[in-house]
Length: 465
Image 1 (tube, rainbow, N blue to C red):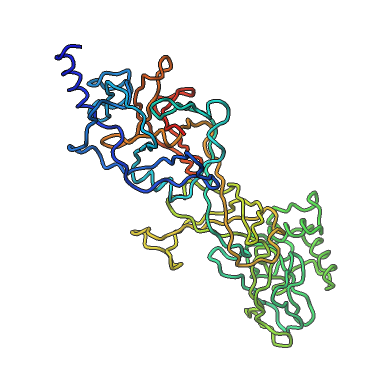
Image 2 (image 1 turned 90 degrees about the horizontal axis):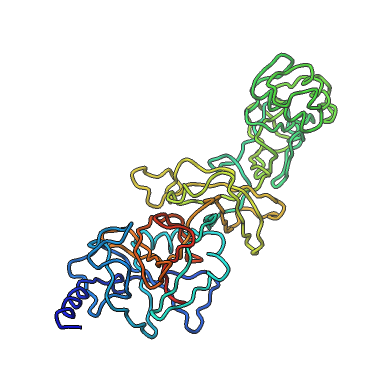
């Protein structure tokens, strides 16, 4: 090579900027249970604040040769001023060196702070164990497949009550003397005696509309629909005879009410007088007795406080994670004794709460949370636990088809954004930078969903492991 040619190459080498700046920031935590054995090297992320004029240049050429000219932007990528170009010489692997991967502050939050994970490993088979090259890197195939995120949160196992967490009030409408009231801890089902006035049982009807009038043939309303549903469910009428969704009090309802009165041991009338029943959302667990046997019963008096007999877990979700969770998502609940039981998300609150439990200032979401309610699939697994701390892992439906690459394939791009380095299928030593948009992250297995000019089977560059 003549002196002039050598001078030109030296000038080109001097223009090549380092793809990876000096290491900054804390390491990304590895997957739980993964031990750091001999030779293990952990990838580290560094915050990217954009290319600076004084960014150091590579003194002796780039990391490896690439298919594009140093002054020409790679196909499908940003221009050469935004993405570092290739050098003319391959850098020798450094013993014990660590791969520096660039990531913005947002990526660090997603990976290390949000508690979001993706189900399943990156893949299995030969491509999952890439062979290292002499420059300390490996090639891994881009995969396409379903991804599901997991959100793990702390929660409280308790009995359900009103949406704001307050207990149900058992309010009496009968006149007389209380002759029996339930004690704390007693469970009472739909169609069962809730308390007694003058020895006459007051029955629990499960429904959302409180009793406010006497009911008889010809009446219509929401509480009549609740009554008809109870009568069919409890076996006092057949579906073919009485429509459980009907809001009409007909002769079939009157006949079924008479059957219920027989069961309770009271006179058959076929009608339901005000004070004969208390309407509440479901089976009850009495938490506090308010009235005492032998005292006067008056309309409007509170007999007891209660919660639902149904178990639920309440978790507080960060508003930034709200889009990841929806009603019907599967959950796994870890109980205080480390046993697990399944559940489903039954309801998601619509009002963010501040850290002190009050409605948060809409102008400042710092510290605010969204309540999420989870119903246990097997309530008996919880035993008698109440107000117990639990861990809840919520699994979302995720994405049916996603392109997946290792997080360690990401590199920060000057001016913002991220790229991956893709190997030429005909010559693995020729590589190009492809901009990508990031989707779901797996900080446990080190994976990320990407979109861009990539296809399943393309090979991206990662550090050798």
